[in-house]
Length: 218
Length: 218
Image 1 (cartoon, rainbow over the protein chains, first blue to last red):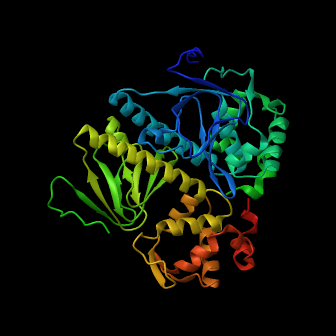
Image 2 (spheres, chains in turn blue, purple; image 1 turned 135 degrees about the horizontal axis):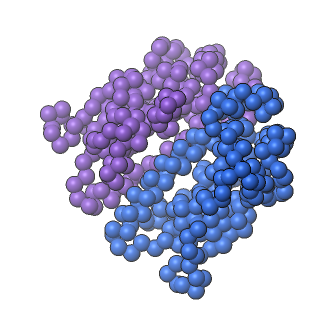
């Protein structure tokens, strides 16, 4: 965990976000933010309503378009309880560093996006769950508690129906990867979850997991 | 069209690419490139072979990681006949401009990626075809000739089977949006293609287009 700035410090405003809370709205102006903990979704807002565009994970910078004097391109909303801190580059070197950092992050997020949108829905959901695991969570065989986005949010990120997400969770419970699921969190065996995803070949041969998802296979 | 640099100019090397030709390989070093015409795919190369990561369209910068002294992260391969030119920023201001430009482009490509991976396969293919239309092609009702990626490339970009892409092309022909399709190009009524995509509601009510794709609807 990064050391949290004190709330009183005027140069590094911090923002705590509850599930569904908005950090900034598309079209607004403000600072560049960096996510400390949690996860956000960036949405393009159009006549048809918000549309999922990107997942933001701890360490990621948000609103880099502000460095080019453009307003925020997307609305940023918390998927789970999150904390963000404002990043205020002063010197030209700092601004350049932030841009280079931002580009490298964009590349990682593009790779994640491809993984979240490739193959059967269950593989995509497992990838999402692994992305949501905080970096400081132990990877040993013990069961870990994970804050979960709503079914609706997970379905939007994976481009599937909330019912499909719900069905996959039922499968995870049946195969003892998932221990319990509450409304906004779940207990997982991270080691087992990781196993069934990696390598992909293992998932394919797992009849129990695969069976109910057949119509969605690519 | 941008005015093409003469091949003799030592400061702006230009590269003409045939379908399938590689501009640079992951892990290599070289200049930052800018695509002038055509379309490329960026692939992450792993043990399991190349995996589609990103579409590159005219105007897009490639290999910005080189500005941070990293090797190329992906392999760049031509989907259609293409031309790229090396961009060699000299001053710090030029480098910063390229970074800002690159970030804005990444954002557009992320939006495209979401569209190429959201909804039924036919909507995704139509989005891909519209992305491949050169900017100088007239949007009037006349039929336009469009260079096409291979079925295999289109399937990889859309995360579907080549047979599915082939089936959608058959539907497009039946509904007279597609005139003819050769191995590497097709004649389209761009106006009609645009119409069936925008707004989405029109596609949904088109029984002919929809029917054979039902199992792939989200």
